[in-house]
Image (cartoon, rainbow, N blue to C red; front, side):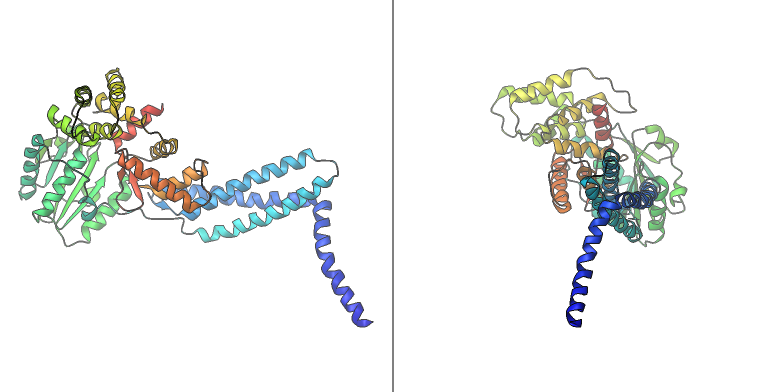
Length: 455
């Protein structure tokens, strides 16, 4: 009998625990909702602190935020919505009913999930890691399908001679936006390396967080034994080189500097010993570039040839416009070319420093020929980053997935989808490869045109 009594007591105890728990959902639902709200207040506070730290990492230190942090913040946002729904359901179910059981059970379930998220917050340190250092020689040697134009050969020779001249320490390359300064200077890098003039090349784009990038540039210059060519790309104002660790002429034996800018005055104010002005392409060069990008190698139709020639002339000799528009019109028929030509001829007001309206129109027209809405969304999200910024593919994935713009089930699927969208945009010349794998960049003129388009 004692044995049976013991067995009975164990069975009752085990049966009573779940009964008591479920009964508690019904009777104590208010206290469970109260506990849910209390725990979420803690989580919400942690979420706000984390967002501030993320903003500081991105905007002040120019770091890359880890994907686990974005995933955690997304979970916090989801939990915020859950708490709002439970509070609402509780407010409209004041009379005793079976709904109170559901509310109590739901509150207990999500309270546990919230506590788990609070505990995960401690594991998110550090939130970020340093962005890739300034572009160095290996990444600079890649310059896509660069073409040498007759009108620019003399400029190449002039800069190369200046790089060989021991009396020249600072060289300025100027020209309007979209004329091809960055692409041109990358070709100079390849040739300088081929001549054995420099052991290392470092490239920094000016609009990126100057204080942070300057510190990393100074570190690189003081920790290498190589002769270094420094390229300061896209300067918008004069720069005291000593603030980025370049002491000229003291460092002349180990370091030379090339700056690129839209404003010739900057070259003069910084006392560049050699200044080269990069001009637009000739009509024949423009036609050749557009033809190669659009795939017009053998034109059976005189109509298409005439239309394409006129489109090339509307690009005003600007390589960026020719490349972007030519890629968008690849394999398109005469009717599309005719429509594009009509759009290009329409007047457009652009009031921006050293930017020709002839470059804006082709770029904006090319947007209309992106058929994939997800690709358009991805492209415009790239515009949220500063000019010439290294944009992490992973961050874009979280933006797209968090905005419900991807029809996928897992983050891995989301990343593969976004990578494919970015490859598509790079093929259209609307995005550029980043300084390292997993990053993309947007030309500053393309970004300005996209923002104009979105207004």
